[in-house]
Image (cartoon, rainbow, N blue to C red; front, side):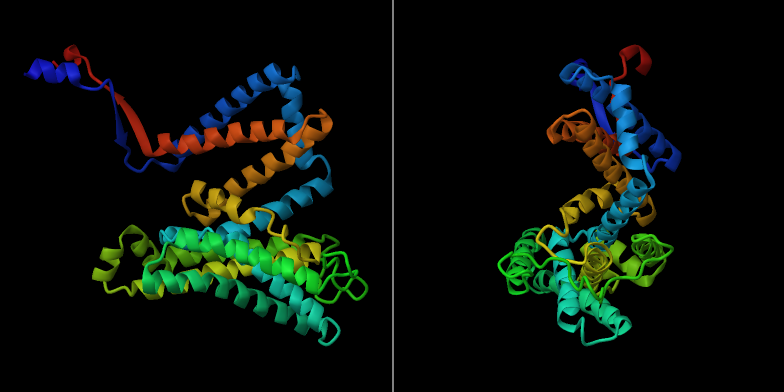
Length: 368
């Protein structure tokens, strides 16, 4: 019987690792990136015949080739990071908020409404303050609706927040018709171009610097909130086990509602920065998919706001580099998406080896 058991023992076992030191985790992910670059090089040579070194150099040039590209990269990093920070408290609580896209759009719509309706009625400082309050309130309210239904009726938050995205998109589409400029265009266009009412101030001749500083401050605040505050502790406990949280005397429904309010409010700030500090208009594409991409940013960083700076940077760098590849080598964007997909596949896959290890079956001699 023991011989039969030995024969049927699997060749390898997947075993959950203990927590790895940070430098081991970093090494595993670095190896994954190197392997991804090797595979991308092979794919590049097979499909295009281009020198992969040239392709990689072009990617770097697309992100850092000029000061303008650097600032655009930093702006994209800040906006993606801001949405990722917004989703992180909910994700850490195991509330799957897939509604970041809609919450950003609604926050941006509230900002645009203030600029359009009060642009010629309020002093610029008061107008910007009104925009801040309106965007935070709108984003928070949009997240509060699924939070209440989850807390009171245990609805599926993934589907609920996902559907709220489409409602937000249609709201923006509707008001784009109401406030269209010029008439008949179906778009709002640049808001207050002559007076620049509601436009964020430019610091040191850099249009995006204020956005970047605001997101940096939010990153630090979110890190402190999640790691050192009582609310952060309660979010972690609810995320680990709802039953344990209830046993510890934590009001789970209150935590859900409070956390989603925070999540939506920060998404609203992202909408504020995109409208008031970047494009000065609102369209259905203002969020530009960040609500979904930010899920990957937060997840890869394991809900750590500081590490999210790195994961957000990787994604925006790949996007900027991919666009440059398509332009320089006259390739369609599908090829650059292939390279981006391969790299992301390896990065995401490395997470498995951070959390698990493969143990091969020992030979009978080793056992003896």
